[in-house]
Amino acid sequence: MGMTGETFPAITTRKDAVVAWGQKNSLWPMPFGTACCAIEFMGVAASVFDIARFGAELVRFSPRQSDLLLVAGTVTFKQAPILKQIYEQMCEPKWVISMGVCASSGGFYNNYCTVQGIDQIIPVDVYISGCPPRPEAILQAVLKLQHKIENPNTTPPAQFKVKEPTFDY
Amino acid sequence: MDQQAILEKLKTLLPEAIKGSADRYGQLEVQVERLKIAEVVKALRDDPEVGFNLLIDIVSVDYSNYPGWTGDRFGVIYHLKSLGLGHRAWLKVTTPEEEPSVPTISHLYGNADWLEREAFDQMGIRFAHHPNLKRILNHHEFVGHPLRKDYPITRRQWLSANESLMDEMNARLNKKGYV
Image (tube, rainbow over all chains, first blue to last red; front, side, top):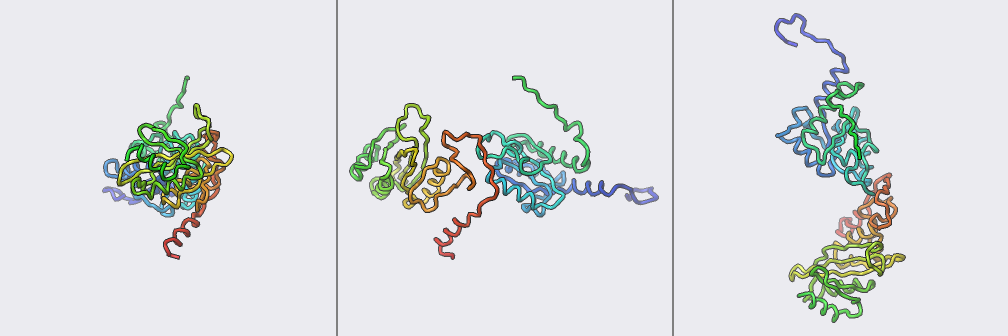
């Protein structure tokens, strides 16, 4: 593209590859922040960690303008219909990151009022562990989601595969 | 005023309402007759020497597994403080399991409205003549009272749709004269 010495100024590629390249580098996240994980997400968006390096810095607070739902925090049963409605208001294509153990599994709130993982309500693309997760973990989740957008039908690469832990009690 | 002076004052104001008293960790606890609680709170609030003008909290207790307890199953404890004079006291009433009902004090303190709704929601204490006694923390399709000792802590209940809350909003709009 415009390099010196080229005789034919064009490249060939597939259409879905170009679309995926654009989508993965311009994720507009909507933070569904209900607890301390949302505070940690502010640290990711701020200058030290700077999620803008990965193209996901334009935080929208409307589900209709965003394509990445970032569920950060504990979701109670009272909150569950609200989360489902917000997910349904987002336009396709859309992705979901479950941030922290509370959103992913209920965390230590093994009680009467907390949903034991938002995947009981909405589909989740990437889970992040931690209480709250370090900002590096959120950046890794964004990278993992970018890989998923680019390769929609492949399994995750080897560096993201974690051996299932075995517990010998 | 110290503990003894508050107790003596209360005994002169409403002697028939006092069932007993105790020193709990340096604070005064007065056991009050259940149906007289609103009168006692009003007397302590309006008396200029006691002047309990702040309701700190309303706590409900389930004594069903409490060691050595022989009284009624449920207890309701009112934490009162005087901002000007600095002294505090607890008022304690007990209510039986079959009819857990306590007179409301929501007409005396504004924050008692939501505190009593919380005690109703979590423990099932009915506050008689409360203006809007409905659930505040759990959702409106929830069945049971989760802080009771016989509620299994992992019994989870799904909510199908959120309630509109316009009943509370309309009441406040009416109160402020916006309607």
